[in-house]
Amino acid sequence: MNEASVPIDEQVLRTDVVIVGAGPVGLFAAFEAGVIGLSCHIVDALEEVGGQCIELYPDKPIFDIPAVPVCTARQLIDRLMEQCKPFAPPIHLGHRVMRVERDDETQRWRVTTDLGAVFDAAAVLLSAGNGAFVPQRVGLPEAPALEGRHVHYAVRKRAMFADQRVVVAGGGDSALDWALALCGQAKHVTLVHRRDAFRAAEATVQEVKRAVASGQMDLVIGTIATLNTLGDTLQSIDVKMLGGGVTIEADHLIALYGLVADLGPIAQWGLDVRVGRVAVDTSYYETSVPGIFAVGDIATYPNKQKLILSGFHEASLALRKAYAYAFPDKKRVHVHSSYDAQLSERILGAPAAREAAHS
Image (cartoon, rainbow, N blue to C red; front, side, top):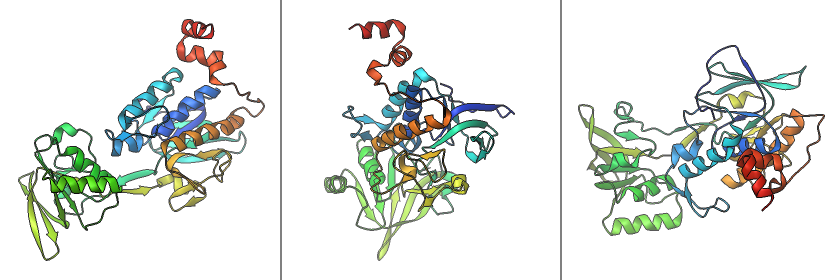
């Protein structure tokens, strides 16, 4: 698969479906497209595949993927990449879709990115998670110069925090999970939250309290007031508390205050957008604009469950309707994958497929 950005030129790339978003749902959609005979291109504004899984919790275990008892988010993305490899869908990273325009004559979509890539597609599948999302940053003047070295908004390499003094700020699942995960690796961990109540799973909250009681980490209730530096190096952090304050020696600050979701250009496409999500009809997860579908976290409908497995289901149904746009004069006949000789040969290779058919 091509995981590089396409060059800026005048070429128009014709395909059956443009998938916007290279997270787990987008990658599975690429596999499903191949299964039913649709070509696709994947476009993502990020510089690597994986979406929020890789951005927010690459090493966190996931337990609710069917037939996979446990895997990390990174392992899930690796397996999905391997799964869709036989269909070799081109992946265009670092491209943000800016315009989606309908050609009234051909009834197809012209999709244009900020880097000048242009696609001619029968359908568009939005699997963009929360849209273009950015972390809530530390609102202190010292923070920007320290970002990437001492101030972090995600944990990408746990090893960089080994034997370091780490302050984790936030009260949600990510903050508590990473504070616990770094306890055995960092020299010292302090969790800072503005109040003595958390927006995390109760089991995780109890685990944090046990870690604090046993001395594995410290918990400070207050707000970060100042980042103290020596030259361009973080030395300590001042925390404002009720009735006073405290200074915490620190080499790193991991601020996990959550994300600010922004649909960006998607909000201008004429779709039915409700509280930052795109409304869909659950028959085929089609939006208010025929030919544009939304699946995964970006889609909203009654009783919506924000689960990866729900996104897989949504993508599967959406692509079956997309098939009708790509091949309006062709009726698709459903074949179970176990009995699909062409699919078997594509995935297993001809010799293996023949052996499987006779076993």
